[in-house]
Amino acid sequence: MFETKVLPTETTSLSHEEQFAYTVQEGLSLENKRLPSWLIFDSAGSEIFKNITELAEYLPAACEFEIIRHHKNSIAELITGDTFNLIELGSGDGCKTRILIEHLLGRKFSFHYFPIDISSGAVKNLAGSLENDHHDTPLKVTGLIGDYFAGLNSIVQNSPKQNLVLFLGVSLNNMDPPAARSFLENLNKALGPKDHLLIGFDLMKNPKLLYSAYNHPLFEKFNLHLLDRINQVLGADFDKDYFVQQGQYNPNTRAVESYLYSTRDQTVHIGALNKDYHFNAWETLQTEQSFKYTLEEIENLAAENGFEVVEHLFDSRKYFVDSIWRIAR
Image (tube, rainbow, N blue to C red; front, top):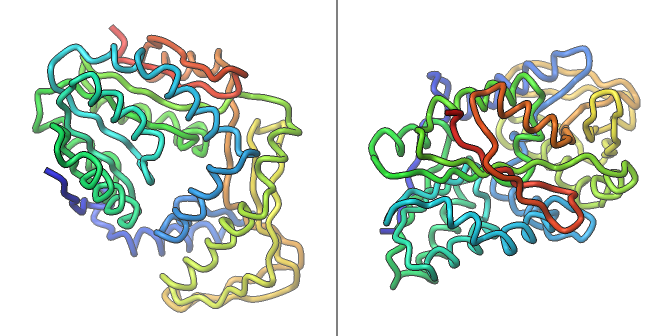
């Protein structure tokens, strides 16, 4: 079985378009304008980010590929039964997970893979590609488009199987601490005692390496795509030629922060909101943040949210960690 389904975007009654509009209005109304990076991720935004993950300078992706290749046996050992659910939150194109899928199939596991993502193009392409490559195997794939927890809850409530949940990359790192704690609290409520979570963390490292990673021209293209998205979805008149991107490490927040700078004094009209937003020359719009963690912080984060660490899986340089968690016993 290879299929895709569209989920509710939120547990609230807001549609995806309404949530997009609300988020943009709220963020541009702040004294220090700020918008979350999830707004960038339509099919085109996902494709740009995929290209970023293939850069040698972008360490999280390279490190995580190494971790999954070298520790796939350790991950497989988490499975205790003959069949299970492999659930990926924010799957994108699933390129790292495909390494694990092929390994699990090689070990004769029978499992159901659920990639969940807000990008319909990414989910459909992934499900179609897996169908082409694995149609003659026991693998089942159901791609889910929409809210992570709507998808996760629909899976775990209707299945007694063990669940291995993947939250790879730097998705949690992109959340501020209160949002990360709320996310993990909800994840804890959704999982059972026999389930495991494999979650990625970018570790604190030389700030010069961080600067190099987040200031490639593709990052500027990715951040500027946010303005395309607002133009397309909300009928705005942003002109990308009047903005530039810069990423920088902030030692006070312990995060790499990306900003779009307005290169001139300008006013932008957003048709769907029927509002004008003024930008002073060189005023910033924060578009991304990526917090960097120490192992102690990761272990404290797990404990504070009802998890216990089973094992840390590192790359050879210890720049990144995929941490295996389970519900605290």
